[in-house]
Image 1 (cartoon, helix red, strand yellow):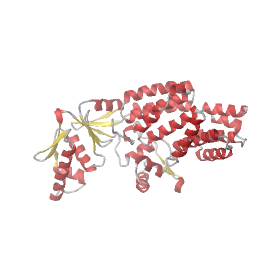
Image 2 (cartoon, helix red, strand yellow):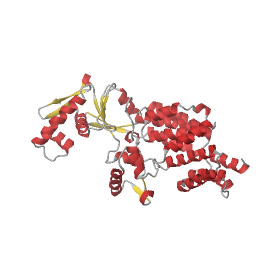
Image 3 (spheres, one colour):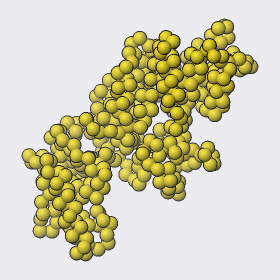
Image 4 (cartoon, helix red, strand yellow):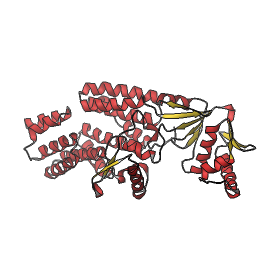
Length: 406
């Protein structure tokens, strides 16, 4: 490898894409094309970067399988950053296997970190942890140490483990400083601000309070019966019952939790659960059926007692009832939470991340755009969506996550 290629590669490793381009901007050999592609990606020119990396992969000969695999890994990173979540992950797996077989452990590790970041974005927390378990950051450069700890912190925040997240971010900050990469230090700093921002609202005895993630963790560790409106779960320290697929039941549970220890009139429950203007006898009959179903679901945690005017929630063991709600509640909050990362998303990528059909997602985006909450750029398949984050609010509890086993 000649001196210009070596110098350009070093510049890219230090986060200096302009310095790299100065050395290889006029060259069209395979190595230069690859480095130019990575430089353009660092500058945010993703389409140009993809074109250069694909040209480099074609230019490398049959004997240069490692170089081609590195191009695939670089393209996978661009796909992740640009939220092209439909990019074929099998190509990344094949590239990683090639790199591992040829002894390029650093770039093989980079491929695994990309896989873990994608899993975290989809809320597949157990899978992300398993991916990290196969990596030893102690034997990797400081930049990879920082990436590792950022993913650990992201998993901890999704699992509402603020103490573990702070510890991981502290390690990430130290590793980023050792690496000396400004963009990486900024990413760590941005992640740290989430822990100091309001993450949820608690409603107890009809009184509201804004909570940081540390305080949410403390609520989860208490003996309270929690009606979690961020994840549609009713839980105590030992049992978690998901009502995510039972929206009527959860609506009733939340109404009862917000009113606790008082009861809720039947007419109010009918209006909330069925969006009915008038509680006639047919709606009251439906309410009795749904109350029976809710009693069955919550039998391990609480009773739902009938009162003269309605129903009340009675937790086991005289526990307090706490309703956890999103810091800012609005329709399509999950979409806004994903868009708040500042990246440009396609409607198909949003649908993949949230497990929603593209047409449903497009209707949600159109509604948000009409309300002035999101903005679009481009046309047709190239159209992308974004929104600035809500000032001062974290989005951790709005993002998708698998709660099983927590």
